[in-house]
Length: 157
Length: 103
Image (cartoon, rainbow over all chains, first blue to last red; front, side, top):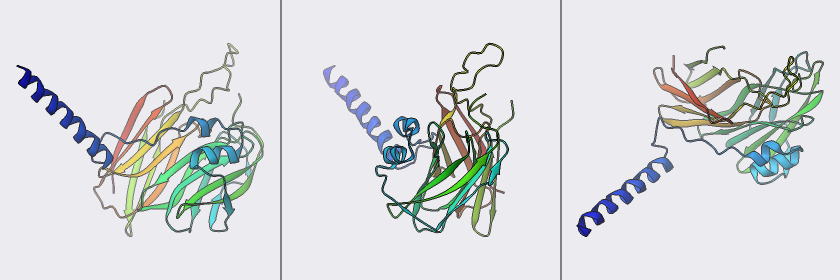
């Protein structure tokens, strides 16, 4: 009897171990593996604080190799199309922050090794502000910014 | 409510994925015009895109991503017929996904 219980226990722990390994290797599809949402970074009120909480450092070099495409004047701040692309090598993370939004961090994208340093999305911009892009290349952070003028804000009613 | 839409195309060895996800993306700051009460925040927090079961992109979003979010990105490789699965969950714990095949 005790021996049977021992068998069950062994089987149980072995099963759990295998699931752990499978999830780690990304084999558990279609069960998605998410990057854990970083509440601290998204509720930060300043660009530097958000970047530090999200990426572990706020030491960033300005880079001409990051291109932000955005309309110079957005009539509707609720839907501003933003494209960020970079020719920097080994880019594995791109973040978009709006300096004058109450919570600047809008979105962070993590790229696999075969994914290009190109992302397009639409964001809300409350009032005329610089939009910052932060790109991690070879483990280092690079940044660029671009001003978007907003005639109707996108955060309130 | 709009429908989730996704399409993926392969050209010259590069796969382009475009999706529009149906979601209110409420900031929590907007007020209901009739009652004057704040509409609670409701937005997608985490999103992941897998091609043939392999993750190519993960995203963390805040409420500043627009309503019915647009996602557009590219990756090297892939071929026609590859399955693309885009999954997400929001701050209320609602999970959803959309699948498409590379054309």
